[in-house]
Image (cartoon, chains in turn yellow, orange):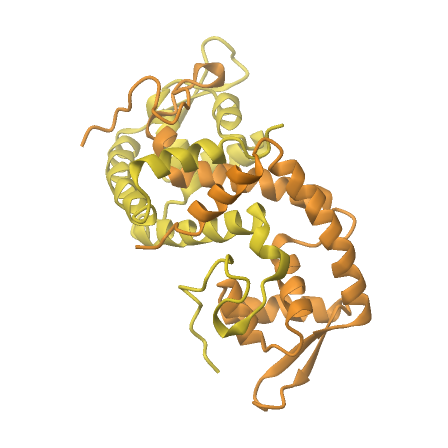
Length: 160
Length: 160
């Protein structure tokens, strides 16, 4: 039996892909193609970042804290569309790794202001370069116009 | 490379979103928008299927087995682009739930031929209807043409 994952398997369109498999309704589902594309991108991201062990979610948090020093956990969670409890766990981990510092916020003493540590800033700057390489690789088959179109369409998913 | 995007990116994504947060390079990343769209779709799918507790991955497997009765685990894994070991775990679960049956394959006695049980077929038929509703909801802001464009672009992610 062949244990190799189907790296190149066709994500749909011809209804019968390799191995004569009938994809049925999956072919027409935005949700199915989105999930396949996301899995491909996630795998590439994790391979690219293997040395640093940073996930796409953690990377987004680091970039937002770098660009918005002093923001609260709630503001970052809201901006990234994740539950506050999830964000607290992500920040806990980044703080343990010495990448992020929490200080009691001046304006609201019940919340924490987030900042990157020097190590966090150095890592984030390094990761940004690597993410650019990853991004070029996953979008290699798309022109700049197509990338913009894709982003524009993705931003309308789930909107009414 | 200049990592600072313009105030208003070319994708029309405002660089400062709610709460005055600066999204920086995230605005231009296909990977970031893909992950956000996927999270939205996943949440909607899980809410839609709450009663049956079926994940998007399990749904894909059920649809492929229904459309390709007698296929092997390896063929289904390859078609969906997942590791064989992951697929075995998914099938184990579906078999425990009485939705899928495994028989020793006639052509290759080392592998299993998969079929939906009557309960599995009834559930899959019911789920297909619910997935159509979910799909209409997540893609409500897109025309049929835009949906086709989006699927076409998603299929080229990770290709060279």
